[in-house]
Image 1 (cartoon, one colour):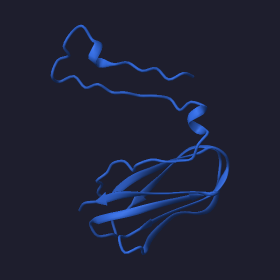
Image 2 (image 1 turned 180 degrees about the horizontal axis):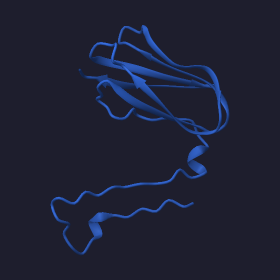
Image 3 (image 1 turned 120 degrees about the vertical axis):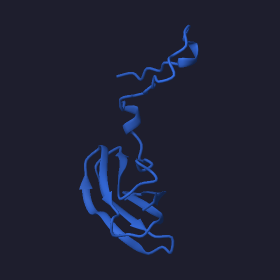
Image 4 (image 1 turned 30 degrees about the horizontal axis):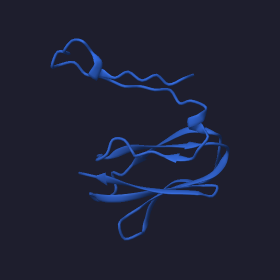
Length: 120
C-alpha cells in the first residue's frame, strides 16, 4: 500500500482554532526491510510507557532498561525469537525513581539505544 502525504499549508481556507490535525500512515513493505527502534511513547512518562521496534526478519531479541550508571534495572525481553514486523512492549517503571533511563534493543547484529524520562 503506497504512503500518501497531504500538506495542510495548501488549504484554501483557515481551520478553526479548536481543530486538530492527525496524521497516520501504514507500514509498507519497504519500511519493514530494516531494523528500527522507535522512541518510547509517551515520553516523559509516569509510570508506564510503550516501546516499539521493527524487525525485517525473525531474530532473537533482547530488550533491557538501564539507569544512567549503566546498571540494568529491567529486562523486558530476554533471548526471545520474534517474527518479522512491528512489535510493542509495555514498560511499567512504578518501582523506579524519577530520572533518565536508557533502553537497549539487541536483535541479531543490530543494536540500538534510546533515552526515556520517568517523571513522578
